[in-house]
Amino acid sequence: MANPELFGRIYQLTVGPAGSEGRRWANQAGPGLRIRFKVSKTGDATPNKAEIDVYNLSADSRQYLDSYNPKTWAVRLSAGYQATGLQLLFTGSLELASNEKAGHRASHHQGPDWMTKIQSKDGVHSYRAVVLSDSFGPSTSEEAVIQHVAKQLGVTIGTIKGLSKAKYNHGRALSGAARYELDALCKSRGLRWSIQDGVLQILPIGQGLDLTAFVIGPATGLVGSPERTETGVKFTSLLQGGINPGRLIQLESTYLKGLYIAENVDHTGDTHDYPWYTTVDAIRV
Image (cartoon, rainbow, N blue to C red; front, side, top):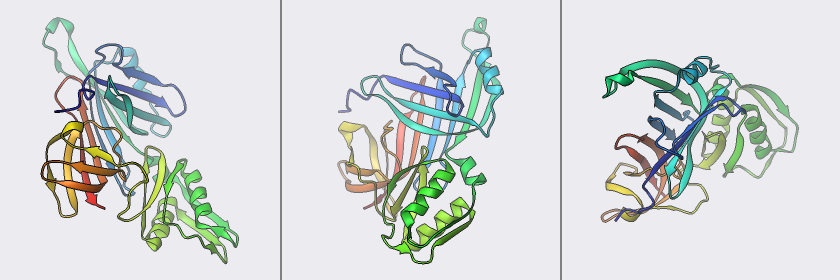
């Protein structure tokens, strides 16, 4: 039997210049506007992305979004359930905001629908723009270099595992795109890096975050039966914003049980229709 707490859909969407309040739309105090979304996250250096459709924004809100600057505006989407509250699904740079008419409503007296399409990627401007030209003296640690790169990317440090404790005897020079410097350092250590909602994490290949395993089973939102894959398992649950790439998953289904690491995560939802799911490709620990 599904957890009764996983009912009563709520969301909160904020769009505007980074660091400002921007414009916020939510349905916590009423039915709210209809939104549809798909958030796709990966455990590697590929930027995460979100596609969000919002129906029937006011003319003032549509005009506000028409003024967006793709270099400085940000998107933040949270969703969840009335009983358990909102969980962050995505935050990233605004890539596109466009308004278009989308047919007619059931009642023609209310006029045509407007659909606003919002597209966003996580850290994409940092990926493109940050070029390093820095040098570090002897006895500099790998962690210090990573902290410097993260600062240049404009992201915070999350879980960092697997770096060498040794220091550079002859110093270290960085020259080129920040992402390629991270690629080179991680490859030499058997690691991989990703940016998750503005947070840099570096993990050994095949290891997860040091968090309590997220239990997924019929009583905690599992939908249908998990499928075996070449590297692990794929499953769908009711929307679970707490599942991100790198999260440990304790799968408890009738035919498949075990500990896995979330690799690719998709959150999909529609406030006025059926979807409100999280789909996960996970690898065996």
